[in-house]
Length: 261
Image (cartoon, rainbow, N blue to C red; front, side, top):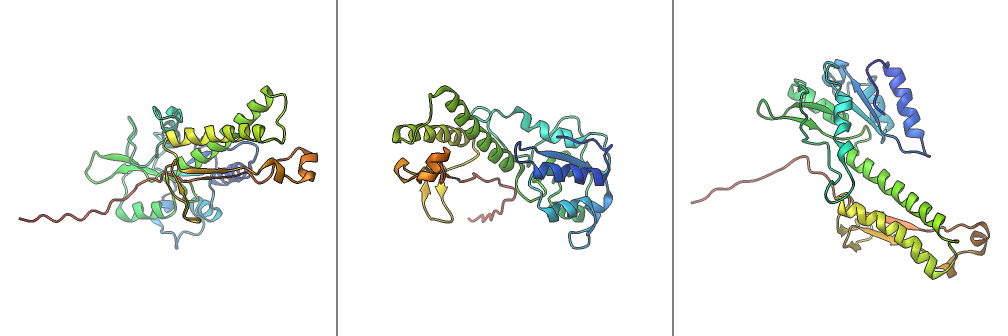
């Protein structure tokens, strides 16, 4: 959902509240604000702006961007990057960070303004380093999560849901048997394999358990014999646990160069 600047800040906050509360469908809300206080005030000083309110709400599905004008509609330019993603190895899910856009002008920012916006997880398009090197930064929702991670998590959940949905349509029934539970596993596994192929998750070590996941994910489904009778009577499978290791997004590089003869 992309809002124009015809909406007031109060209305934008109402939109955000509705989007964050949505459970049946995962929306992502894109807002642009031109209020100079967002950039001029640091996080401690800013107590009333829409940026600070969304920051305090930890809004995971709201993306706030700043520009000194609304000429280029950057709140529409930024999501256009994600419109080309096909969630596969040929067209993987990437980060908004460092991306360049044609025919939109950079917002001139001082170092303090840059840091103030970054601290509130407000996105912007500006010259980074030399003049002419214009990039989007930093690519986060108002909760601090990377936009690509939020989109990726929603995509995995959606894909698992509809893999299972489509299986249920074609099967006579999914019974409490090892064979049918294996089919359920395959539905979930296909979604995570696609996420791995699209670069959303990567092999690594679970920071909580220390377990290594070669393809970046783990799926645990209970044995049919361990399902309680009350759950069987209600047609429920509880205790399916999936873990994915996000591949991460680099935004800063610390390099030490030592040249010696």
